[in-house]
Image (cartoon, rainbow, N blue to C red; front, side):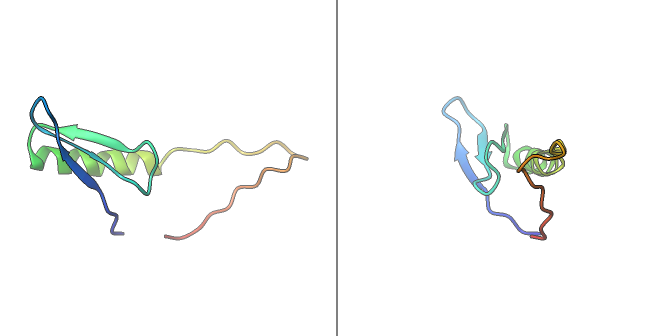
Length: 67
């Protein structure tokens, strides 16, 4: 899977990045190499979050889609 990230230079030094396709998924690193490693971990973590099953009789639905 390929996913786009936006990398910013931090004012205090180093870098930080966000993943627009995954709201709230962001990380930082002192170097680009550290940032890339942290991004991999952050994306995996954001994508592995378990969603609670909806209660029986409710109107909520869970769908599984391929990306």
